[in-house]
Image (cartoon, rainbow, N blue to C red):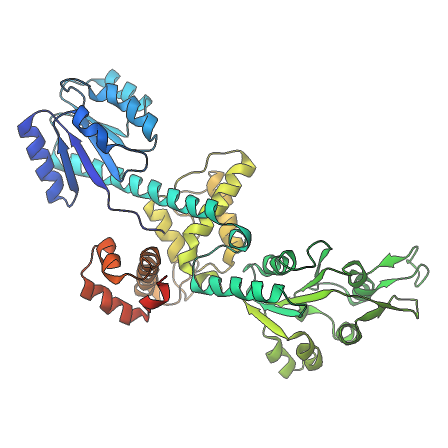
Length: 454
């Protein structure tokens, strides 16, 4: 997920001794603390999106903590505010929570209680700001970036290839596992070409009976066979001037492959029951989840058809190979689902995010979208993904926990390098590690920082 500045604790307490001891306890627990003696002094530090959590005493000289709370909520409704008092009671606690306080702590309290509360508040603030960063990125993306979403190097290459091929009339073959978005890429090729004003015609070849395949592709004349009661225009003819998308082309019957090859070579078809050749002008985009070259070598797909359609290639990476795109994609699908189901978009916990990042996603982007839908509908608990059995381990990853950790660590480093445009010292500072540690990890993961400059 996109990195945000480290979260500070803004401590507001008028008692010098209590302020000092509380600040010391939080500092020892690893928090960055900024302490003020009054709400008036702390006010300038509160702004929308500020990376802070407010810990404020209720009884203060001047502006009280309970009076300041609505003001903070007006500035940033999602900023966690923890109220502390030695004079509180249940009614005050309930009222503060109703007005949006993150939590309410009564004095005297233990350091453990305070630290645990602040740690949860800091985590919530981090996630809130990360989600805002993702939403800003989604809002600022336009054109093909807003359709083929992802910051990974693989998706950047896919977008470049799509835009290059869209300007041509070349037929294209798209490779990708189930759920990687092959039809979406085909539509992008069409929508960014000069053919976009004409039809985009999809046809799934999987499971299409041989007896119907010819009619679907080439059409038929009225009376051509028993059930042909009227003329039917085939997909090729209907796609004239536009784009014909043949999904799961590896499933096309061999007998139909021969006629498809002839149609592509001659750029004309004959309707069933007719001897008249009908010329067509459409781009043909085919998609397959299998290696057609390997299938042709095994005589399971016509080699001549493979070489005819295999002019230009686009290979879509599986989601497990571009994990840095998961947070952005999940937030995109969450917002779409929230709009579709008229629900508020919920916020991920850090444990749920880690679950998403560690999972193998055998169903790829399609599966991720389904999980986002269930997340918005409130059908999931702390675990967003279902454990898989077998040799791959609980999350379906082939190499266990160390491999998962490396994937996550590499993702975070790449995101920070991208955010800092390849500036390694700045990246090391943002990650909170020594420069030498960053250099070692760049070598370990084979990351070239220069690729992110500019």
